[in-house]
Length: 311
Image (cartoon, rainbow, N blue to C red; front, side, top):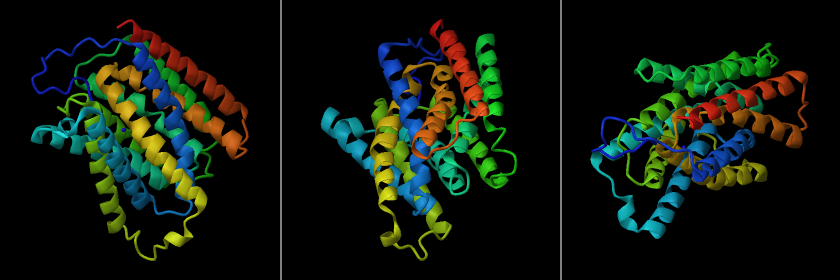
């Protein structure tokens, strides 16, 4: 789990970002991989503490990714200025500790599919942040956001009828705001030139933050690793290697290489993937609100993507 041109001497005007085949590949990975992580998180927190497990996940992933960078590009690729490291810490805390950590905590009481649907509010906050800083999105992008929010309303209407905790719902929405702020900040702050190096430092910062929060919450008291289920261990391994190393890194690269509005469309697709996995693996019913809302979400993605391709 990042930025457009993180060079400290970058010109004031943002460079033109082309939507290439590599962008579509990375976007597809984020669509599918992150859609599956909601299910993985739900399985992990069934027997593992939320923040300690999330912190372990991202610290491990950061070390794996740093090793890959060192082997692929040489140890020098891990170098970063103090300013770049500071930016990576800020973005990592917003994305990993705030955005992901609060979702993990919320999924101790909120179903994974509903959590994914609520995170679909991310593009709305991104557009608000863009507008607040003078970057006026095209009208079709705004229309796509509104259509997506309409689909979100249809999809979440059954889940907000009192069957889940309101506190959990609010946690996910706050997480979406923090993730949007992290994404937006990542597009403005100077991060390491190598996006994979930036991802490693961001995940390390967020992971350490997660461990500290977990300790402050007292999650270590009475902790018995022997009580962790095999399913939780497998899910944690999946989240480390696929969800973090692959998914987060693809996302970080996209934020440096593609229009932010296009990148944010993953938040519309992820819920569809999460709901589909819930139906296939957990036998969750595909009701008409889910089918109708999913169709609306796909339309919103098409609108926004088609608009960004013309930029």
